[in-house]
Length: 150
Image 1 (tube, one colour):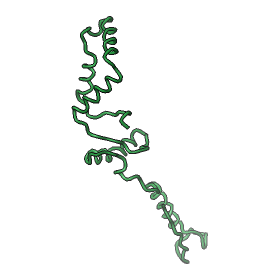
Image 2 (cartoon, one colour):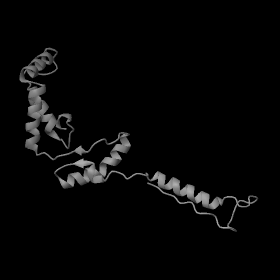
Image 3 (cartoon, helix red, strand yellow):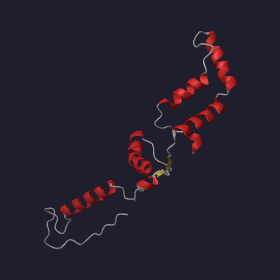
């Protein structure tokens, strides 16, 4: 919170010409400049960087905490709550993606999709769509967002 004290102007200080006993413009301008500068800095305390990310990995938390404010600013979105981040091994990622494929594209549905595409000559009937998707999803994953994980 910004607090300002107004001091009385001593006699004989520089004043606007023609206004005896009037305000000291220099002092008024200095107060306004200080008010604007402190106001632009955000009169309230900003959220500490460490509160932006929840992660068991200290290095990941530090890196993400440094990047998130700029990302939020560039996207025009505000950070409403801390972001949860975790590192996963390749094996953990593959198991998770297999689970999600089982949930969202069961074997029967994948087979029916391949059969339909094969009728149009788009893919061979022998294509294992789930294997192709799993290979695609795991090929070069650096990171991903999963709404179900929150």
